[in-house]
Image (cartoon, rainbow, N blue to C red):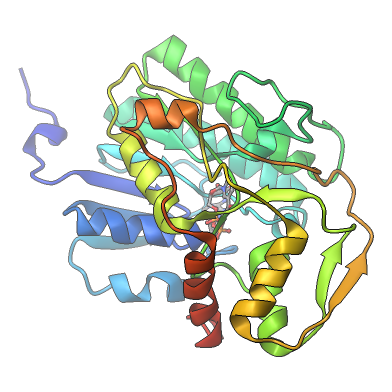
Length: 324
Ligand SMILES: NC(=O)c1ccc[n+]([C@@H]2O[C@H](COP(=O)([O-])OP(=O)(O)OC[C@H]3O[C@@H](n4cnc5c(N)ncnc54)[C@H](O)[C@@H]3O)[C@@H](O)[C@H]2O)c1
């Protein structure tokens, strides 16, 4: 029998699409730390070379500019498919491209996984639950999603990507992993993407009014990026029988108002709150049930307290981050 290139390889070769983004850059760092060969693929739509500049000198790190809506042929053992703009202002900028990134990107990466017999993980999202009628959200809940709204390019694109993953699994026996990621925050978040944590921190540091949509009573759960990356890596390491979907996020819920107050306190800012109307399709409540993750991922759960994670994120933005 001819040995496959996987048998010749001495280190795990891992492809991270969207590797120059916020979560992707932390994941690349973590995988290099584990001794993997890491190929970071990104079209730099929302990611930046600054996020991975500190990794470029590592001989086990490789960077390739590529758009996942086009096919890619590389020899790898594992694929983390993270490529996709994640913030509403970015994914609504070119909604057709957003759906293409999720759907064509999934098809291209699944095709690659099938060809090279790699295991593949899809960064799905809590947005597949839409504006949930079930609280907290369990993986068995099918969601409450508007198929024709402004957020649909993202939500439905991600839902379709999940469908493709499970069909490739059933039809072609692919080893798939589908985490549904809830709000994640930390250093290297984009400073101007309108996401609530970065928004509040940037406004507080600049002493500008903090924009609060609605009355601030809507809740979110915030997971620190290192905890999330730990969950992703543990999920990839599970046996082939574990496919997900599995929620990864922080079950501890905070109101947006509480987050704003905490950011003001930790930055020592004099910023005042400025109330604005809620945008359309904005979910009122979001909280993961992580019982399945705890059970299948060796007791995984977020361990970084919000105050600590916020401190590290504030320090990043205070230093000007890696971005101009
Ligand atoms: N951050 C969160 O709270 C969160 C929550 C749920 C799901 N996710 C998912 O996790 C993944 C990473 O999110 P993030 O917060 O790091 O966002 P991000 O915008 O920082 O990272 C996405 C990366 O994908 C790249 N990209 C976008 N379109 C591409 C394309 N067509 N081809 C190649 N690269 C492309 C971007 O340039 C960027 O580097 C996304 O798939 C997102 O949907 C994130």
